[in-house]
Length: 437
Image (cartoon, rainbow, N blue to C red; front, side, top):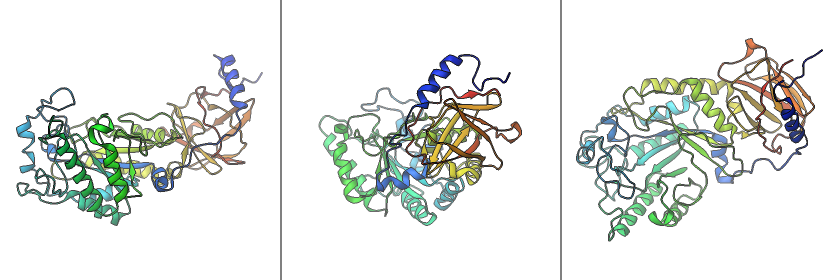
């Protein structure tokens, strides 16, 4: 007797789930992006860069500064404030090349770049007139406007360009003082105005208010300035206001196709450069990207350049490895939407037009078993070349790929449907697993 294509353990539960999923009709599918965010949704992959004088110490940016973090709990103790605040007098990254950074991002398959114009430590990596605590200060041996150079290189290299900007400033004397906080708000608005005025087209402004309500930093006033000066800009949700997208940090966001989101995640353990930092494996990096896209979100992947201005060679190598994978499999990431199966540890899926890309990251037995979709699969092929076998019966979709054709990181299967994949309701593949034959 032929074996059932279902798991033998818990088969009754799985059959019930299959019956539920089988009757699900096609729905409205993912919510379209606003026109000004269409490029952002199609990009899926960006480079986050945390960098500043603190790289001389190899400790975390902002958080390692000693002294009072006004309004933010415990004090830092790794680098005394008087030492931290004077690192810029020694910071001379003569090997910094904006063009090289952009080339690295492009080689990684990234479509945009977001740089820390000013972090919580208050040091400005641009030529601000609001403070002397800046990279172009007379006391700085470097005296080059890093933001300006990156803006120009990104434009020349075809990358969208964005800036991170921290509303907290643990160096500024007026921040969160009872009688001078209004002056601090004026300082914030002056800097935001400079960033939106002096550097050409700005595609992203990535705030980081550390969970404070909008009123603490006049989030509404800051956003009004930005929208007036850069009408097409994308703004994240850390002004205390919802704005354009959510920002899960150091974790992959949940499946969400009715509101844009972007996970910001470090390649290593630390945002800023750390000597000997433990880097994520290529497998972990790629599967993080796939699960973000499968959840209908973006990945903003962070590196921290070294004190001399270079991105660490082993980080560059990891990014190039990711780019090599995307050169072969990018059609399953760029310009897609998540679903129709929500991502889990074993599988993720993306879709575009009448095509679903199934990413199989773990195999259990001879095949993969998924709740069926309200479309007929006309053909199943591997992006790497070759065919996959597929059957749809009794509310289940069963896929099999010979072991010798499976990729240990991600086997990408293209499913060509007899109708649109975009109006299918997303569903949980909680039963995805072994399909005995």
